[in-house]
Image (cartoon, rainbow, N blue to C red; front, side, top):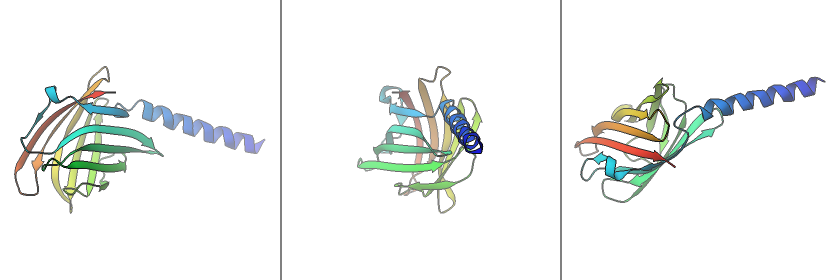
Length: 154
C-alpha cells in the first residue's frame, strides 16, 4: 500500500510540473518574422528559439547568425527567477538570466564575466501566437546594438 501511495505522489508531482510548463508562454518553437523585426545592420540575428521543459527548469535553444553572418547556436537551461545560469555557445556572453514579470512579460540579461552585454524584454501576445523581443546592448567592439525581433509560434 505504501509503494502505491509513493507512486501516486510522484505521478501527481510530475503532472503538476507538466501543467506549470504548459502555462508558460515561452514553451514552444518560435520563428523570426523578419518583415516585422528591426535589427541593427550588421548585428546578430536569432532566427529561431526553442523553449522546452528540462526537469524543473526551462531549456532555451537559439539558432541564428552572428555579426559576421556566420551560423550561431547557443543554449541556456535555468529558471525564470532572475538568477544567472550558464550560457553556452555565445562568444559575447557566458550567462543569462530571465525574470518573469507577469503572465506575458519577461526580462532578460546576457552577461560576460559578470558584466551585462545585452538586456531587454520579451512580451507575449494575449493569444500566445507571437512574441516581441526588445533588446539593447553593446557588441564586443563597443558598438551599440538595438534589436526588436518579432517571432511567430510554430
